[in-house]
Image (cartoon, rainbow, N blue to C red; front, top):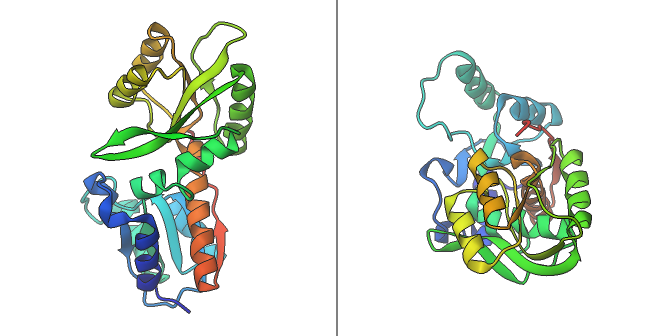
Length: 257
């Protein structure tokens, strides 16, 4: 059976982790090692005490996540955080995390997979961050109402709730773009305007983005940060499991965002 280090090396290679700039707190790769051989992977969107406890219950030796254990930066090992870290070590659970490398991957990535789930054909890239296009884009003459229905169903099935900015009736999807997670920000909206995007699908964004969208004739579908980032980690866990001949299990843990 593989070690966590062997799995991490393989995952880093297929995700091109070393080539893709990310936020410093992402700490892509093997965040916590384990002495145990890995016979089962648990996949989750976020590292938390909830997903860790579920991984322990599932009999996994490695927790593969999209948002790792150190987003808050360095913090004292006290209180509940101490208990979480202690449980991690005592149960010999490793943690592997991939943020933007997983978001932008052409076949395993959150953005590419969300496009497929919403029956959209991606033909170009979107949402450039430090030289890497994270999202995907395309065009469709299908009714926007149909996309809203599909997105609402997808979001609800992953613990979310779709919000949509105002638009006129009988509108087509037109040029569309997807940027999962916190996808509505100043940079992505500026890019959307420059590219003539009519429909933008994101996880979440601040209130002002809704006003900006209406003023610029863009419809934004906010499908939930958590919901829009459930697909990539499952695809990655499945790819790892097939490569090494081990089991995997997805741990649903909706956050409400």
